[in-house]
Amino acid sequence: MKSRENIQSKSQLAIVLSKLAVFEKFGKPQLLKEQYATDSEAAAEAVWFAYMHGDIQGKAVADFGCGTGLLGISALLLGAEKAYFVDNDDDALAIAEKNITAAATMTNFEIIRADIEDFNKKVDTVIQNPPFGTKEKHADRQFLLQAFKAAGVVYSFHKIETAGFVKKIAADNGFNVTNILQLQLQLKRTYDFHRSRMRRIDVGLFRIEKT
Image (cartoon, rainbow, N blue to C red; front, side, top):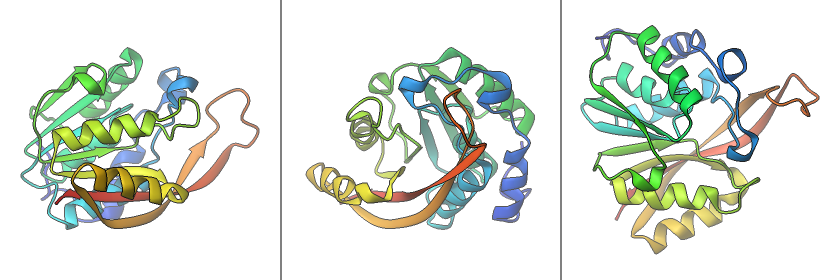
């Protein structure tokens, strides 16, 4: 199994991720679920950040709404004890399984086809890129609430302008936002109505810890 010893830098991790399959090549993303592939640079930046905070290596990690699996795979490559890939979309999980095989020979993972509300295991860390709630109101809220039930540390992508909302829901549930890593997500042309080949959106990776 590839582990921390094989990945020596954030840029090396990004290179590994850039070779993996994404929706536009191997599957059909669903607009109402706001399915966009997390780009390799942002995924590497996020999970490396979590690794440097001691929340990946030797930990049980869950990737909620895993899509094509880049966040969970990054965790495994950086030495996670186990990773759970959770999604309710068969096409996404099929791509994720191919990507796990392509990234390394790994046995310490579990693919779970389920709504995140049905995930009933306890883990150390949840890392997720949830829907931002632009198509289904409060979709991001449900991801946060479930993550708080599953883990003591949560890493979650949100639009930077929603920082107040994230901080409030964290505080209301006994958690505290300890860090916000500002990133740009590269959104490739995914749906027919998209006019530009790529656009960038400002997001925050929120590190949220149980108080």
